[in-house]
Structure formats: structure tokens, C-alpha cells
Length: 469
Ligand SMILES: [Zn+2]
Image 1 (cartoon, protein in one colour):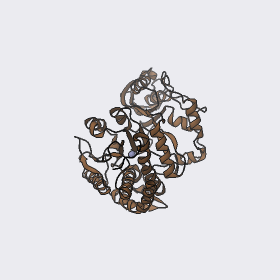
Image 2: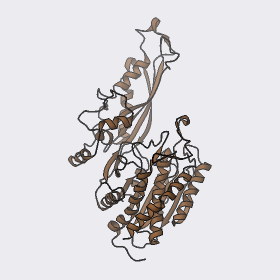
Image 3: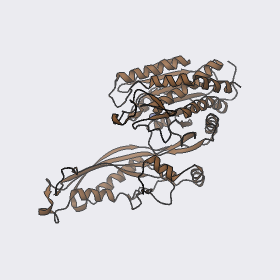
């Protein structure tokens, strides 16, 4: 009974929250700036102000040496009911190439049902989804169906470097029965999705040197090998003809999708032409990777190698020379059950092995971040799927994410074992992290409705019947 009134209230309040998002998105809280940054202090303070407005208690900015500020608020007025730990982040990515923005990044503009601006979808709409759901419950019933603790981080976009330390320092304050992390994507516009796996990441830089200086390729070429060619050969042997990682031992720990997972992957909608268009693949481009694996399997269940950087001599100004040195940065996305340290060692070893022509090879190991996955089973996930379906009026899909989100593993480690439900508002058109980032306003309203329903669904499955206050 009260849920339908709460949902109606969300609809009524929607225009007000669009204004709030507009105003919040004018704060240029770019976390790539060194801490302390005045914009991130403003942004954390704004989150606190909005938390107080909707009725959260114990609201405060929380600091940790060297980290951008966290905003925290809670509502723990329902004894015996479960406690949800809500997570979102208030920092944003840098704006990239300003001339590519069709409207200024920190002056949000609505065009064709989408709001454009830096941070609107990633993750300011995530922050406000919860605040809108909380506001509607408070206005309609004077209370929330369960207890909540809301933590809004200020450095997600730079890798959540201090998050684990922060969580460990406040483990008691943040203890909960379930975590809702609102910062991921939906499979498509209008299709509610819960993310159940993320890839990990390892990397390394390689520098190849073979000569004391550049040489005339006519006078010396032939007997004197080309160090740039040596680097290209080293890079080429890392993958096979299909583009799959070909480093010995690299696939040993890769867990194949189970028959159920495969069936689930095959049930997801997929259109190759749309996918290629969304990716910006040029006419005639084919998919890489084993032809026996589907696109979703390649994205979520298989490792992939990328060459992220490559330097020798710029083509402009190049002459007929043998270049003395070259360098590259290589990274590989990892999947369950690959061990990041072991995979990084294998990558480093492969880069160093048998240098062509005896060139000097220097390898600097890079990051080693672990993948994350959860079994989307049990009452919390069933409740989440029901709430998402209710909010979006479409069945909920369980998806993977090919990217690496550093904040999930710290939560899993420190708060050990409680279910973590990952949801969010990104869609294929949202251009998060790129120029012209945008939020689909229709999906945002649906996301708020789903969030409000989720609080009640989770209270029911985790905490039993509602006690009168
Ligand atoms: Zn984000």
C-alpha cells in the first residue's frame, strides 16, 4: 500500500531532483586534482546538505589523510530491521577535450530526454537516486522500511586508493547486512541490470634498446637489427592470430562459463550491428577473439590484452633510419580464477623471454588488480531483481562488466561475506568518462523507483515483517 504512494511521490518529486542534479553537477569535483581540492570539499559538503534535506541523520564529512573527503549519513531508527550500506561517489573524471563538448561540461543541458554534463551519470545521478528514494519514503511514511548507512566516496575516479583503509578504519560504523553499490551500467537503455562480475587488470611497461643511437638504414641496415622491429615482434607474440592471449600458462586458471551461465548469456539480447555501431567500429571491421566464444563471453569471461601505448619515432619527421629504442605499455584484463600476481609475472616473463636479435629489454611491472564475481543467488538478489523489474517495468538481467571497478573488492574484503548488489544508470549511449557524458532521464526516474522498492524488498527478505515504529 505505502510503496505505491512512495512511487507516486517519486514521480511527483522528479522535476525537483532534476534541478538538484543540475545544481550538483555544476560543482567541478575532479578527483584527479591533488587533495585537498576546494571543488571536492564543496562537493562533499553539498552531498551532506542534500542528505540532511531528505532526513538522514548523523550526516558528516569524513576525512582520511591524503584522500578526498567522503560524505556520510545514516538512518538507523528501525530496530530489528536489516541495515543497508549504500555506496556512490561524488567525484568526477576530468573533462577531456573541451572542444568536443556540445555544451560546457559543468553547465548541464537537457537535450532529447538526456542530461549532458560531466559526472551526471557517473555518479551524481547514483547519489541522487538514493536521496530521491529516501525522500519519498520519508515524505509518505515518515520513516524508511529498513536502516540505511550511506557512504559517498570522493576518489573513485582515481582508483579508490584509500577506500580499503577507510572501510577498515570504520568497519564498525559501516557494518551492514547488504551493500548496494550504485555506479554500474544497464545492458541497454530501459533494461534494468545487476552486475555480478568484473574483470581484473594487470599491466607492464616494456623498453627495448639495441643501439647507442639511430643509424642510417642504408649504410647499416641488413646486418644491424632494428630495435623497433624487435619490440613489435615481442608484442606480436603475446597474442595469436585471433587476438587471444598466447602467453604460456596464462589460461590455466580461466574458469569456463558453466552450462547455466552460458544459457544465461545466450538469453541476453544482442545485436552485432548495434554493438559495432556503439563501439564505433569502422565498416568491414570484424570481431576479435575466438570465434567459438560469444561477444558477452569475450567481454565478461575471457582475458584480453591491449597495447595501451607505443612510442618510437613520430612519423612526421621520420627519416630513413634504424631507431635505437622503443617502448610500449601492455595491459591484460583478467577473469575468475586468474591470480593477478601470477598473471603479471607471466606477462613480465613473456616480455623478457628470448629478446629478438639480443636487444636489451627492460620491463617495469604495472598494476595487478583482482577480478570480482558473485553468485547472483539468494534472497537479496531475488529481492533486487523484483525491485528492478518493478521500477523499470521490464525483467531484470544479470550481466558482467568487462571493466575493473576498484571499489568492489575492498567492500567484499572488509565487510566480508554480505551480499553486494551492483546497479547503476549508465547505458551504451552515456559516454561516461568521455566528452558529452549524459544521463537518460527516463531511466533515472525508473532507477529511483527501483531503489525505493528495493529498500522494502530487502527488508522483507533480510529482516522479516515490518515492526510498527
Ligand atoms: Zn563511477
